[in-house]
Length: 74
Image (cartoon, rainbow, N blue to C red; front, side, top):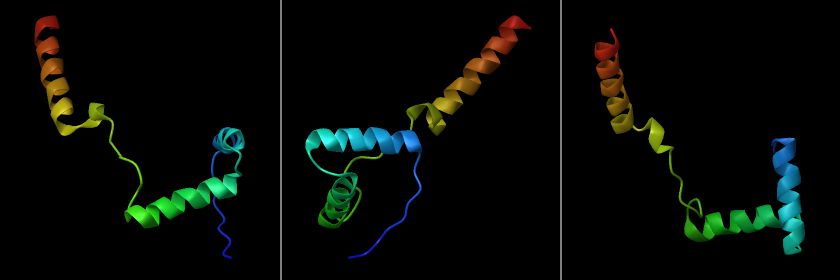
């Protein structure tokens, strides 16, 4: 057996433990299940998305709107 040391936010740990407790498993088993899914799917077992607010397209629209507002207010 290997040992992994990780640092996470105290609140996240407490909340995770509560969820896993409701499922009848420990935090360690929950993390092991996650890692098994990583191996099984050969990647992160869920979709990762960036906040669309920060997309280049949205930032461009915001800059155009800002310039328009500056013209009308000044």
